[in-house]
Length: 134
Image 1 (cartoon, rainbow, N blue to C red):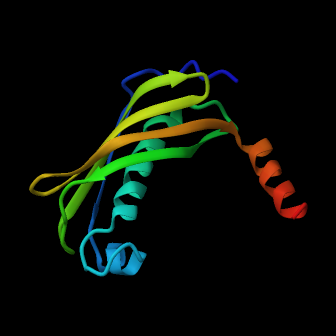
Image 2: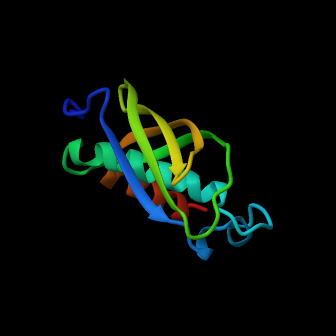
């Protein structure tokens, strides 16, 4: 696998607006109608994917393997949020990102996220074999 196009410092920011579908009570991660921690994590992963996917060889993708974040502040429905990911480490096919998220007023979350570069066809085949052999 040639991941020569990947380089430390690749980054991407993604944005969205918090809706009723993004809240802790809907995600089952709490009982309040504020931005859910799992939704923050998903947005951070989205930023990491966007930062590197266009640089991967044809037939390769990344899969999330670890996320460790601090959700620092609550964000109500209706506020815009953004998440960013910066590639900080490349160890073979292991990619490590610094991630953070902010709403319109302040930093709301920060942490680290790891992804693994995989060949899509063999990854899909392994997953199917797991299902077939249960």
